[in-house]
Image (cartoon, rainbow, N blue to C red; front, top):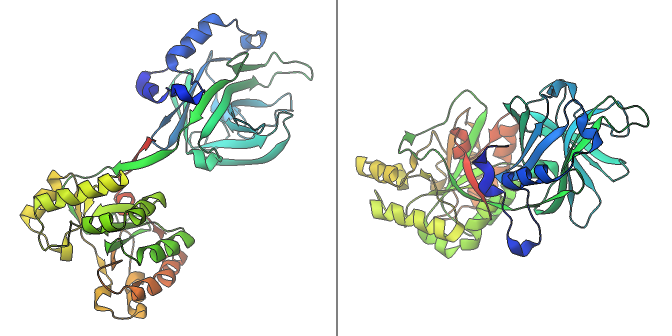
Length: 401
């Protein structure tokens, strides 16, 4: 059976009315069910399971014999007797639309899966390939990890099963096909997830990210504020992400805005409680506590007010498990030099740059006015706008709600 690393994610609440196949119950299920005739095929499905790990939906499939991924069809036509496929089928409760997640493909079989949406008569409404991680954890055991949103799987209850065909069927034959479970679909409730933290809070001081990739991090200090919603709309319109170094006192004043920053895929970071020069360790800790209490997110990045660092401030950030983040592109927007000057400063960014702007602490209309044009310029030059955590090759931590 499958290892227990995901076992804790495979338990449904009793009130939901949905049950989830745990690795232990899968074992019991295999023992009590008589195999169907089709399960004598070359690589019939022996076991399968679904769970969540962070944002990912994780599917495990074990076959009786090893399956060669490159010989499977990523977007199979199940009406064709010779089709070779290994898929997980998921049907949301109350619908008849099958979401079929299929392994294989001659190229990138370890990095992509096919997503087909069809009805029970196998009439296909859409199909595409999406990014995935397909790992052979043992000779006969495969693990697939996808982002549910890419597969258009929203949080809900689902019926599911794993299906396989070795492609040896004749026009009337079914003995080449098998499924798991054998008689009735299993049930799984896909839970929404929330971001709760990030990695990389090791006390280092950074001024930029790696220069080898065309990525830039836009940062906004001194918020949240009444300007933040306008900034968020511009970022959303351009599919750009940013990091907001917020003050604990303003997170308490604008809690909904702080939560919206996270909900839109941006990052919250610590900028002290009240913007004091060289804040104390307790001040820094208090700001992180406020951010966590209001949003559920524990920041791993800290920016000292005015960019002023001392050994004490660096040590306080380290003790609070944060990096200290400065910048290598300063728009000097706090001087109100005009939107044209601010835009020109942003455009000077290069691979790995961290751009300093302000989203609060004064009149920020010039910064807002400069933003759209500068983003468009960077994107035309091939830059992707990411959070600081992503720029530094760290990652976010998610948990099911």
